Length: 142
Image (cartoon, rainbow, N blue to C red; front, side):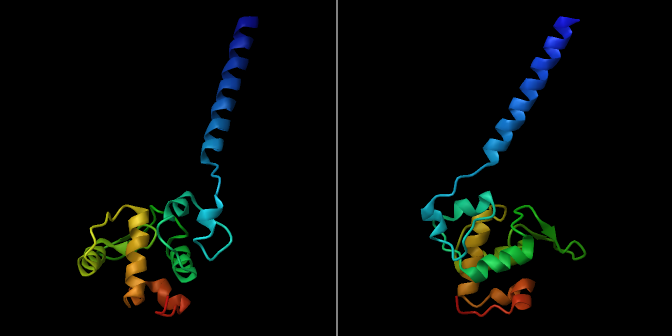
């Protein structure tokens, strides 16, 4: 009986230890150099930590927040023939078209690439392709 209780306690400690490990793994330390790239005070998701080489304007931040709440796997427009996907909620055919126009070879499923294409689109007067762009009344000047 004591052995069974001891095994049960060790098992519980192992499970708790594993859960703590998973929680710590999800904790992200944000360095000052990453914060300096943003116009806002805090980074909300791990995806934002990968933006070191992309300067994200406040308008882009608001648009992404409005479109997907920073959910990189969000799927929208399900009532349409072509659903929208990812952080920037873009249809794949629109993605392909903008990539051709921008002469960029980017991965549709990569959140960082989605942000890079959004930045290009907004800098080149294509921001109005996004519903939230119109809803937030974002100016073309970024």
